[in-house]
Image 1 (cartoon, rainbow, N blue to C red):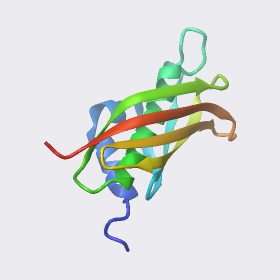
Image 2: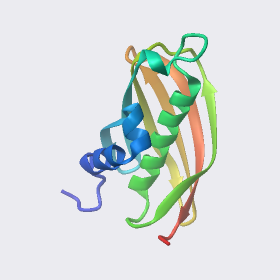
Image 3: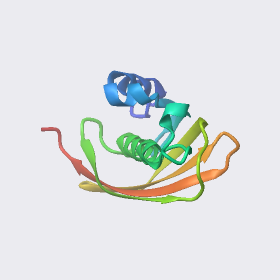
Image 4: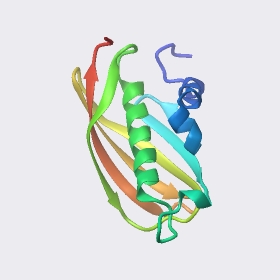
Length: 139
């Protein structure tokens, strides 16, 4: 096994150790260099005032997938943070399993670009996101 290859178990541990991510139930499904698939079981309490899954939950899932994809593509020990993100909501989501596939478009020494697709359990596209990530050395 390539020691620099991303480890989905490491991503699972990182998500579980984050009170925010653990509280909403984001889980790592798969990881490879520059690519991360996450999932969440959207529950009834994740609904907005109109009864569909809140767009903030979909945006969080997309941002996390893109950010972790960037993490798999940069040098170990480097840090990354979202600098800018856009989300285009394609259709409303109902509670159930939702997945986001985050992929790196380009990862440079100081900046990275990523995109994500968010889909429901039937595979229907719910949202498309693009992000710019600041890449820095550890402080």
